[in-house]
Image (cartoon, rainbow, N blue to C red; front, side, top):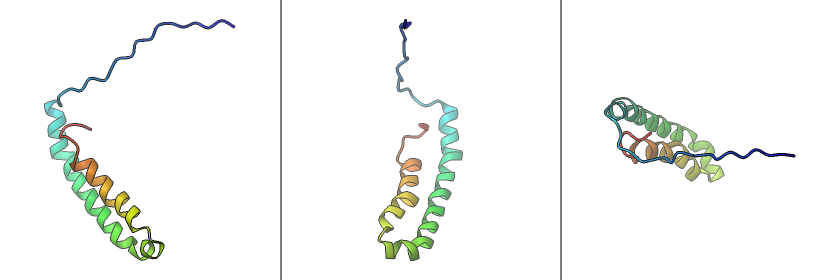
Length: 81
C-alpha cells in the first residue's frame, strides 16, 4: 500500500477584536434574547420543582436552565460568539 502524505498547513486561530457589526448585533439582538432565555429558564426551573425536589436534582436543573444560559449570554466578552 502506498500512502500519499502532503504537507498540511493549518491556520492558527488568532484572537482579534470584534468588528462593529458583531458588537452591535450582540448588544441589540443576542443579549436581549439572552434575557428572555434566562427568564424562560427560570420559569421552567420553578415549574420543574415538583419533579426535581423529590429526585434531589434541583442543582442540575438550575445549572442547565439558568446558569448555563446566563454564563453564555452575560459573562462572555461583547462581540464574541
